[in-house]
Image 1 (cartoon, rainbow, N blue to C red):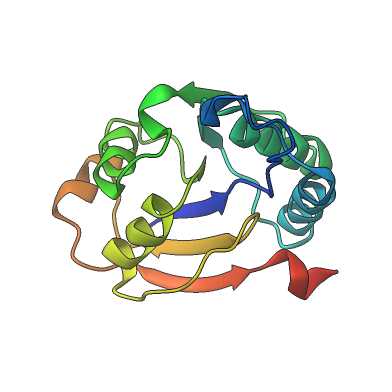
Image 2: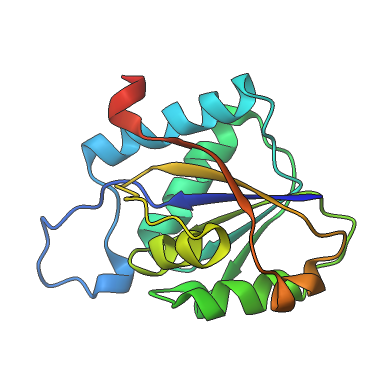
Length: 163
């Protein structure tokens, strides 16, 4: 069994309208929410073996704040393919992982992450900014994601519920 943690980036700033979307940073609320999710990961025993993250600034900042707050010591792999990506891009990236990774977290964007959650579990659930979903996957190898029929949504945590 593999576990996938799906984390939407925390709330981003629209203060500087001249910035390209890819370069938008977190706002004050985002900088507060991301560490909350990191603390939750540590408290719930959900430490990932690997983090896959979009290259967007708000996603990178989210991953860094979560990693720091959870005391994550592993690697954060950044992928441009995960920026504003459809579910297929996440599935493609995950299916290429080495099987030594039992629990992986992806950090990215909607609507792709909500669609990924639905594709994996059959459940349509909202993922507001900084929301974290845990999905158990009945696979032994990440390559099996290509033929996976159904994973199980274990839990969704939303920052507003933790504050």
